[in-house]
Structure formats: C-alpha cells, structure tokens
Length: 323
Ligand code: GYE
Image (cartoon, rainbow, N blue to C red; front, side, top):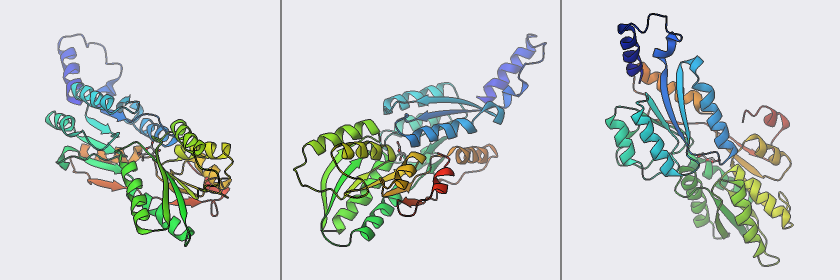
C-alpha cells in the first residue's frame, strides 16, 4: 500500500497536477494496518480495541482500517479479504475461534501481506501462515484458578457450575481444559452444569437464571467458574436474584480482572479474578516495527499475568487499573 501511494503521488507530480505542494507530505510514509476485531462482547474486548486505536494513529505514522465482526467469524473472513484487496501493509487478526482460517491466511500470504495474530490463536497446519502471535496463555490462566480451588477446598463435595466462553475460541479451550483436568483429578468435584455464556453478561444472566429456576430446593453451589468477567457479572446478578450470597454461599471465579471485576472482588462478590491483559497495542506495534526494520519477529509472545482474590485486593490495585 505504501508503494501504491508513492506511485500515485509520483504520477500526479509527473502529470503536472501536483504543482502545489501536497497537503500532507507525510501521507506516503503511513503504514497501513487492517485490524479485524472479534466484536465488543466484553469489557476486555473494548479495552483491547481502545489499546489498538490509541497506538495506530496517523500522528504516530499509521493509517488504521478497523473492522468489528460482531462475533461472527464469517465477517472476519470478509474483512481480511477486503484488507487484501486494499493492499494494506499488515493485517492484525483477533480470531473468533481457532479453526477455519487456512484458506484466507493463505490468500494473505499469496498477496505478500504479513498477518499478526492478537489475543486468540488459530489452528492451522502451517504456522508460517502468520508472522507472530501476541496474547495470553489461557490454559495457564485456567491452571491458576484450578490451583486456587485445590487450596480452598480440601475435602467434602465441591459443587461446580461452569459457564463457558465462545465455543472453539482459545480462551474457552484453555480455561475449560484446565477445569476439566481439575474435575478428572478430584473425585469430590461435581460438575452440576456446563452452560454457554458466550463471554457476555446478558447471555450468562439468561442461562444462569434458567438453571437456577430449575435447581432442586436445598441444592448448594460452591463454585461458579466463569470464563470471563462479564459472565461473572451476569452470574452474580442471577445468583443474587435467587437468594445466593456471593462470597458466602458461593465462590465466583472469573478471568480478565478488569476494573469492574476488581471492584466486585473488593466487595467480596468475586472470590478470584485471574488477570488477562488486553493492552496489546504497544506489543503489536513492536512486532510491526521489527518487520519494518527487515527483521523477523519472535513468533510467540505471552504476557505475564497476576491474580486477585477478595482477601488480598486493595483499593490501590483498583485505582491503578488501566482497564
Ligand atoms: O477473556 C474475554 C473476551 O479472548 C482473551 O475474550 C480474550 C477473551 C476475554 O471476550 O473477556
């Protein structure tokens, strides 16, 4: 795209239409980045989009084409094809689910456009179809939650409700995988239900309310394992409406640890929030700058992450939270 812009400028100058100084001489040096974002399903996602938009600005040397797929993978495939037609310099893809990417990534490769995967991964035969991946190790996040449960419940039955994220997405696979191993390793852990919350508050409120409506009277719930913060918000709302006291009768676990979740953690309603950092814009820029310098970027970048519990969280941790 940069080359195309230079060529057009040169042609304009040669044909005499460019007698005046171009108004934006820096135009020719802008790096064009096409971003295909999953949607705006969660607080995490909104923070992730803002991080990208704040880095890839014209004043910092980029032209950003940003497409929101509204949680539909087909929309992402269409967006990537459009970026290829527009001959962007880089494609940044947050893939909704892991499968179904081979052909469109091959098309990007044939067009000579590097693809940087952000947040979630793809499951492709040939990993040279993407230049780099930057995101979280979602299985490691799930392991943190399972280890916390192992410390918290040492004997007696543990009744668990599991709210899953978007099926087939990297965070769902990693966080579910860790819980499944925990269930297999502990005879006293009982899975009461597995519900699909699709990473949203509204859907989780709906499925959780339906489940609680049908729960036999007297049946206790010890843990609600939510695969992101927004699912926890929906689950807490439903639990409270059904008379459960979060933090006393039931421990709610979630992933992301955005500011709103940290506040609920301090109130005691979320027992454990495992961090998942959405502020990935600067890391994506580093990868692009490495490639601009003609070097090969590191293929896999995982982010260091913490965890917060209702017992250890402080107001200072909430105040200093950037997302
Ligand atoms: O945990 C969730 C979001 O892919 C890591 O997607 C991301 C997850 C994040 O909607 O809130």
